[in-house]
Image (tube, rainbow, N blue to C red; front, top):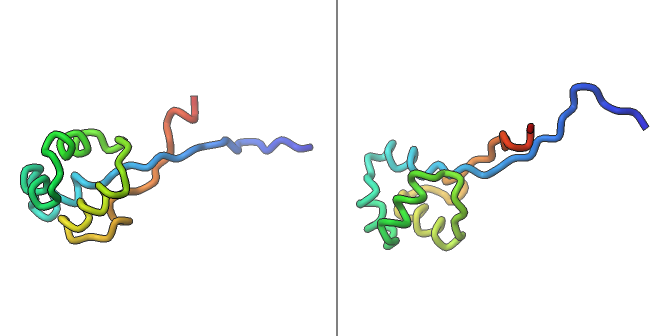
Length: 84
C-alpha cells in the first residue's frame, strides 16, 4: 500500500451565518428574536457562537424570520483542530 505525500485528513465543521445574514438585512438580535419567536438569550448565544449546535426547528424559524432558505444559514469550513 502506498502513502500519499502531502495528503492530510481534514474534517469540516458547520459554521452558522446568521449574524452576517441578519446584519446584511439590517436586522438586530432583538428584531430577529421577536420575528422568529425565539428567546433573546438563545439568539444572542447563536449570534456570538457560530459553531453552536442548533436544532433544525430553530433554524427553520430563523430562516423564515430572515426570509432566506435554511441552507443559507450555514456553511462548512475546515476544522482547524483536525490538523493538530
